[in-house]
Length: 402
Picture 1 (cartoon, helix red, strand yellow):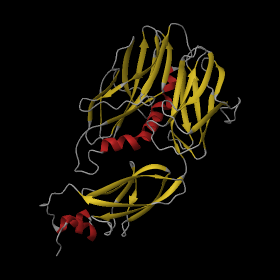
Picture 2 (spheres, helix red, strand yellow; picture 1 turned 180 degrees about the vertical axis):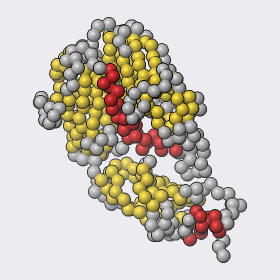
Picture 3 (cartoon, helix red, strand yellow; picture 1 turned 45 degrees about the vertical axis):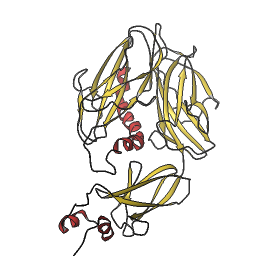
Picture 4 (cartoon, one colour; picture 1 turned 60 degrees about the vertical axis):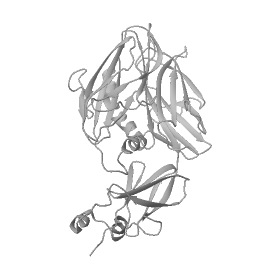
């Protein structure tokens, strides 16, 4: 049964990780976004499933994906437990296309810039372990460890002296990106398999330590049709036999604005046995839904000189396009809190944050300042023509033209 888990999980872990990069990559790229390029390696990571619960002596496996968001190769990358527990721990690289093992056990791997490496790791408890949120250390010889985010790259783990349910759960959102959008209401699905003992399971949903303006309800569903098999309520209690694969629907009703913060703003679905022991968990990011149209106007040096064509406009880590001759760009984004950045590569940049309501059409003015060039810097006409700078961009840089 453990081998069945390998199918698709690494690819799902990459999908969840990509949904975080809008926040995490901005943190890493802050060293070079509006300054001359710096070479470094930097890591982010994700783990699936989010929970395992086994009997002492049995092995629990889970999958991890590590992405190098930096500009140089991350060398000697491995997975470990930062704190000892009553268990043995091993890891090995996998092929993300097939999820088959590659290399040899406990052997570090190199990750190229912008690349990823998938791993499987195994924990075999030697004594009972009460439920604990295990931190995992994803580190390379030339990086700092990947930042730890509970429920995203940690593992809820426990071990019992007797057989216990082990609910492996994966969530699915409508757009397949691990984010549920609440525009009045929102919905997502949870698929499970019980790799442990049969038992009575209570399923519930919560927002963790962060209070959000949402109400949550759920039901057990028909895997073929998605229709509710149970009443919709705050919890669902059902008997889940060994190897059974029940599915659940989670319904969200919003009563206020939810900013896009995929690390902290999450809906958790938890599975407890009849002793109230946590035996399974999964989660999705949640944000306000709806879309808005944004017009960005870019200027150089002051609010009167349009930047012209060729300025790259990004929202978070997503490039929306480049400005036209009038220095403007109009595009559609998800409503909520966004950071808009204008960048003339290696020359100038600016950014601003704002909250956008669904259906709104705000105009954002970004006045870019030059950076990264010293006063004595001179470029030949041919070099500047190669850069493709516009007349207004040349004025900003202070060049004298024949």
